[in-house]
Amino acid sequence: MELDNHGQLWVGTNQGLDFIPNLLIDNTVMRFGARIGMKPTAILDVVRIGDEMNLATNIGLMTFDLNTPFVTIAPTTPEISGTFIKSVLTEMGTIKNEFKYDQNTIRFDYTTIAYKHMNHMSFAYKLEGYQEDWRITKDRNIQFENLEPGDYRFNLKSVYMTGMESEPIHVEFTILKPFWRLWWVQLISIVLLIVTIWLILSSRIKTWREKLTLENRLSEIKIDKLQLEKAYLLAEQKAGVMQMNPHFLFNSLNTIKGYYGQGKMKEANGFIGKFSKLLRKILESNKPLIPLQDEAEILTLYLELMRNRYDQVFEYEIINLVEEQLNAKIPPMILQPIVENAVIHGLAPINDGKITITFEIFDGYLVCKVADSGVGFSEAVHDGHHSVALENIRDRLDILSKQYNKTFSIKILSPVNGSKNPGTAVIIKLPLNT
Image 1 (spheres, rainbow, N blue to C red):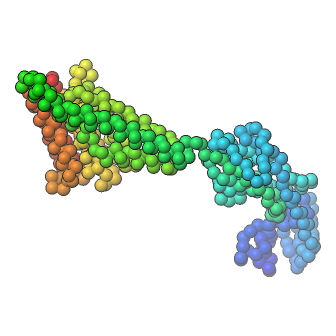
Image 2 (cartoon, rainbow, N blue to C red):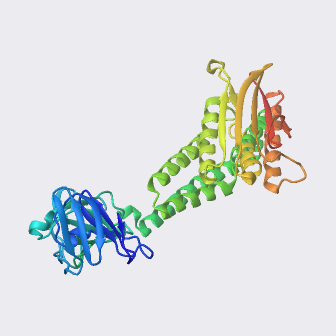
Image 3 (cartoon, rainbow, N blue to C red):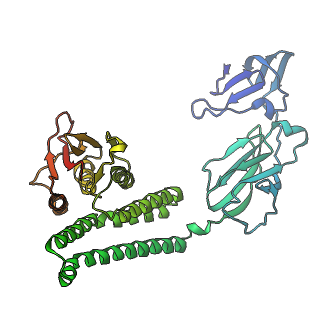
């Protein structure tokens, strides 16, 4: 290296002579040897004497006057020799080029006239709408894969090793959206989903009302008092299944709408699949007692949807210690309000935690435990829905106690020992042989 009196740093390399014009202001390196027409040569030592630069090279001593004019090589403007859409040669117009959503892999082949300087020539490119900065390559083609729908502008220019650039050229094109991502298609899908859910709920409400009038109908045909009481209790039991919080349904629809609005088709389809399966499972649970495995599957689907709504801020685990051959049964949707309270009132306020649901047999009872590591439970600080949900569960258990002449009970524990937060545990005991 040689730092001269003008603040210029001269550097000998194995490819020639480089220099920094003003080390105090800018550290940009220039290929000085190329600018004076020097072929790539290893520089072993550099000495400046006045306006004369002396170089010791691997082929001998070189001397030249710094006042000698530079060799100027202006690169020519490149040309696009071919455009390929999914490896198929495609003509590109100068004004408007539109491609389908699945025609989103595009390759540009290009060249320029440089003759003997081709080895010192590079290309700079930038795809507006996909890249923010120019990129340098020596390749004669560039390919962009899996482009999102939108408007693009491909810019290209030649760059000589001295840093001189040609005038850029550009090609504009558009990748169209698939029809299912058009706003009016998404709107129709959401409306159809809402109408379908409304029809299902209307049908269930109508069935519920018909059940509630069963007592009067049976009275008219003079069914004995015992049969009438059993029919009434059965209607009350099925009505309790329909107590799912309406806010959950509407929040689920808003979640689906949000996925469509963000273009997250995979997430939207997955959410709709789980949501539809949950509704089907609920509608099929039209008996006073259902297999324990069915209730566990309903809780799994419900918790997965709640995790999506709350951005995966909590974890859950379902532990079933009951042997399948015991054919244990459970009132449908009896645990859903408890799980909902655990998420909304226990874990959501701290954006963290875990829900553990355990099923086991103890002393002739099926013991169902829902435990969370949330903020804890207090009778004085829960809202109206929280209270109504617990009262509905107690009412359902009272009805079952009368219907089967056995004890169905619920117990709430808070705080729970060993939890970082106070936590809450709700324990429901159900007779095993009903």
